[in-house]
Image 1 (cartoon, helix red, strand yellow):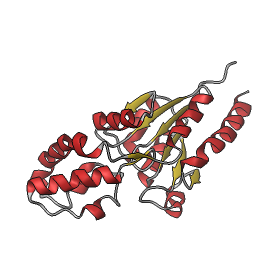
Image 2 (cartoon, rainbow, N blue to C red):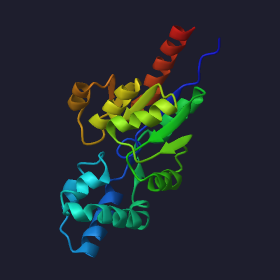
Image 3 (spheres, rainbow, N blue to C red):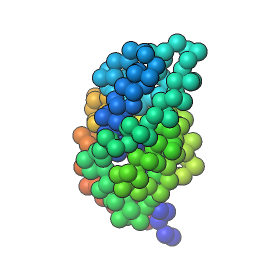
Image 4 (cartoon, rainbow, N blue to C red):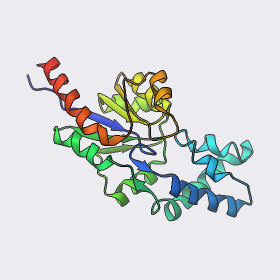
Length: 211
């Protein structure tokens, strides 16, 4: 019986892309346009949760929805160009495809902006699903039958575990290796450069178990 194709999900911010310079620029414009103080250097240390969670630190509740819409409208012009690929990002997706698998991106980010990032950086995903955070990421991971989910935040670990997927965590975001292990990550890597070698070992074990 043929072995089912492997699907691997990836988070976006601080997993595949270093969006800190772009997000900082977008927050700076938002602060200038609204006359509201935002500690942008602090804000970019807390990437992962939905935008509205961060905006709640700087705006009253009744303004958060409008400020989210404004931020997202500003984002393409200010945040796409400064954002860089994380070391090993392209190679990680290539490793999945090299095994005949599918690589999908599941992120809390506004999906059109996520797609723009990937297009700008030449990172090709088989599917991009936005607007999902933490346990809610399991919706997309389950729908796409992802066996593995790679992320940098404890919320990503929870999403993987809720979906019954293997949680691979990279310590490149706001959560350090100890936090990721405590949250229940099955594998913790320092960054994505170690992912292809890990994936090769994982795929060999998976093939043996399914044979």
